[in-house]
Image (cartoon, rainbow, N blue to C red):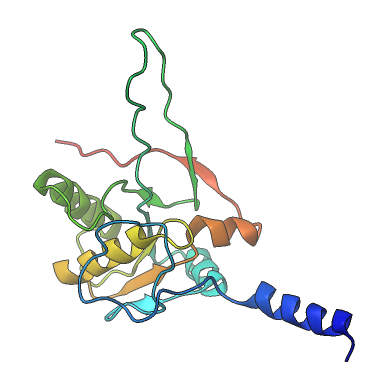
Length: 182
């Protein structure tokens, strides 16, 4: 085999390979450096690839939960500066619950997360729910793990998130953050 042929085979293999994985899943939540290789599993959840996530989306029976954090307002902006949050493009029909995927969350964020899940699943802990963020983002892993601990029984984790979804050229739509109502 020529060098060129060997290089072509290696490049093809790498192109089809999943993102790097961090190894075995940890016992607890990831607490920092959330954009890093993720494990290939989450005990109690079903890990799905692009094709399976798309199939679940097409079927319309699974609640899709986007957990990408909201971008923080930059510090030190001069008085009077208008700052607009970057819009979030997500999987159509997904509910955006930002900031619920951190390793440690405040009690108010936990209340918000539980309310968002109850809204997405109509309060049915057995309703299928799929968590995603971006590729190599621990936020979705943490959120799915937390949902399992809350008692949700049919949990999916989509590690490629909107990066994988958009790579496949599937539709995305601008979403607004889920708001609690009184």
